[in-house]
Image (cartoon, rainbow, N blue to C red):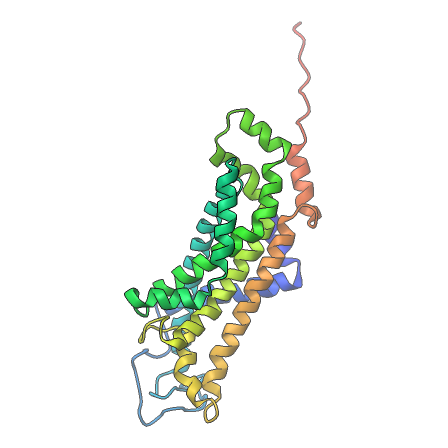
Length: 297
């Protein structure tokens, strides 16, 4: 709770938490209800301006834009959660290899990560689209792999510094398993950097979904997403700009919120930058006063 209070105390944190909360709430509501059915079309009311019946207007088929954006929030939220999870797993596995005691394994891993980072995410997605076709799995695997590599490369200096510290060596000498040392000593020291990188990965995943869906290798046709709403209306931006404006504003607001959330989380989770957290850590580390012994009468 101290970390959440610290995030909310910052202006960028309040904005990030508000936008992300509205995003999650909309995704949950859209799974049960939307103002109009996604498949309800009106050929006589295409590209309509915002009105009381259609709050954000209609698209080229006469479908309600607001309903599609609501339903798309759930798809984008799923993509972000899966991408961040895959990135975190790949990043942790690579960090474990980089900080391992085997010098040869660590060196080979660093070289391999540097080589793989140079491969564009779009190229990986194009390769995956051959066997998988247009699907959410293409976005998750391509982005998760690329962002996981970046996570390992960025967090490596802090992880190595922690791995070479005296308390980690003492933990290894005490017989603690390498996995427990990694999770309880090394990862927490690199967590501020990892949190920022994962938040950037979340924001970039939203942008990647829009770009890959526009290219035809992202979210398949018929599945609502913000990228789908952009791809179906961008051709008519000169004639009907509002249909492109709404999903563009949503994507921009969410990406900014995710990036600011990572910065606020890094500051809130850092005892140096967060005095409240530092006081909590000091109280937890302070030994309890010894109880006076009662003398027998």
